[in-house]
Length: 445
Image 1 (cartoon, helix red, strand yellow):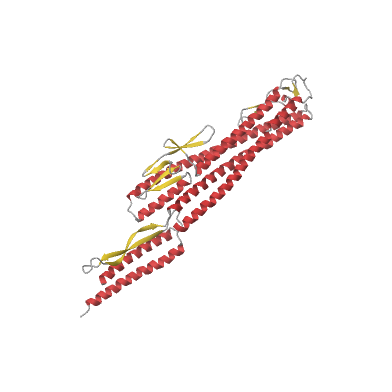
Image 2 (cartoon, one colour):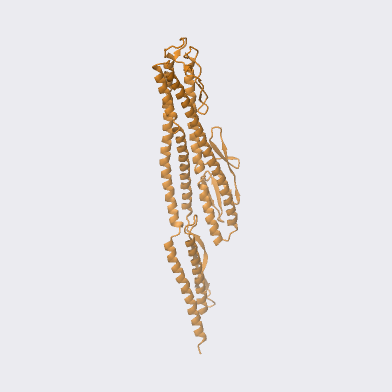
């Protein structure tokens, strides 16, 4: 009986010591990013009773069956999915805000209004030199604001593409690390401490990937993971110890696309998708700005060609360029403005050509077009901001739910320390009692 008690107490003490070690590990890693709380799993140890009753089973203590990570696969998948959506929305809003600043803060709208106002003032005295000079100056300022806006949009595009390329590099780095973790997991002992550490690394790498791209994880029997991009039917990014290579290509309009080992890849979520969407909006905004600048050049130069300048010469083009980046005032003097109709004498005060120019600008409505462009961008920013806030809230809720399950509660661990310490001491006491009983039996005369 004493020997049986000793073996039972020994197994209990070993389990209590292992539980104490895990509790200490949980406490020391309570604030570690990606750490999942561990618990010890044990089962009853049974043994045959002996020759008298060979089929009877007696309990003979406990045995350690493994270490359990308190992480739910579904909740982890939700954290990745909602986190990817939030990252996409956040990246898109940041890009749109930069686009809005580029077209609004450069003052293109105000410069167009000022140019049209200077033409209206010139109608009162078409031969006045100061009014003519004001028209040229306002036209030059308008052209320069278009140039600055185009340059600012180019800078926004370069920044977004740089961040996207950095994201692609990060995806390739993390995918490579995940492939190496898969190799180590395939060789790790089942339910070992090394395996649980590798599983933490695996899940942390998956979460890092989800910040950049939408990934779907499939867990294999050996605890390794296969990762696809673009849903369950997408392309394989990681399989076993092999990682595919993600690459980015830039189109002529500045938009981006992705390939995985040379094949076109669809990325619908994560930071890369958000930056791709922002670049699409940027290309559309730049196209509209170029069209507006080209329209102003066309309208003004067409009106000039139908009139004569202050010296009675045929009107020449005031602007050059085909878009916002290269529009420029090319008139060298205030007399170059063709305010009078064709055939008028030098110094004519007839503003027919100027009136035709103003009518053409009114019909083209460049100020209204620019205002619509600004409103479109601002509305996109406002709408995407609401979406971003909602998705961020959902992602936060999913993360809190996972943390409640997988995180370390220091109060609970403190209770476990006391409980497992008492269990260890109790098993030690059982061994002492068993020893005393055995000694007593030996001492019988």
